Length: 112
Length: 114
Image (cartoon, rainbow over all chains, first blue to last red; front, side):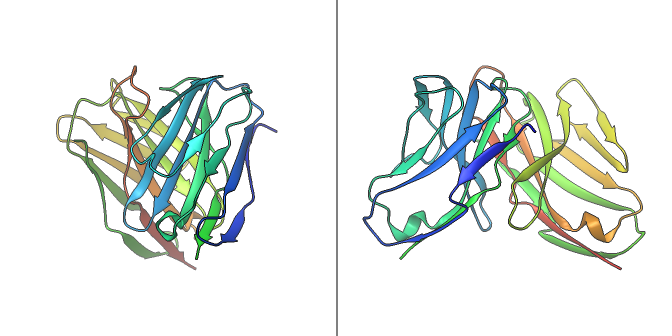
């Protein structure tokens, strides 16, 4: 089954404790991206990747890092999480940038 | 800067009713527009994708229209069912070659009552 998977689905952590949210897709998609969703704000893009080793900032990249060492994986790294990063995070992939995006199930992160 | 607005934020209708969800955007120079459905605890499911050259797209009981000149799109749901209850998001893509230019609305939360 074609899908985008994210882990963990739920995470509660404390300020400053490094964490990684994994994202994997099995559709051989070139383009992957990370979004955060906050009430009343819609989804905002954090980072995107056009292909292996090619990444760039989205609208709200501060406090986040990404890497794309393999085509199927695009982990999101929070080196020092803060409470304002409490949010619902989505990973998405598409064949290339203007094509239909497929979204993962989301990761709900709470930073206390 | 492109702004995408969805009104109303929430909508409740009785089962069987036809309904329209609205999406407006400020910059008419879009590449495409996509409607998504979001269920609690789940990701976004793509419903319809309308290219800028198209006026509408249909899938089953769903019909999405696009009027670039007025900066508006509507999602029409016919004969609504309780299973249609979800949050509906629209998103516009501004250009083909730039990769961080997809803008989402905040969504309309739809409740269909049995």
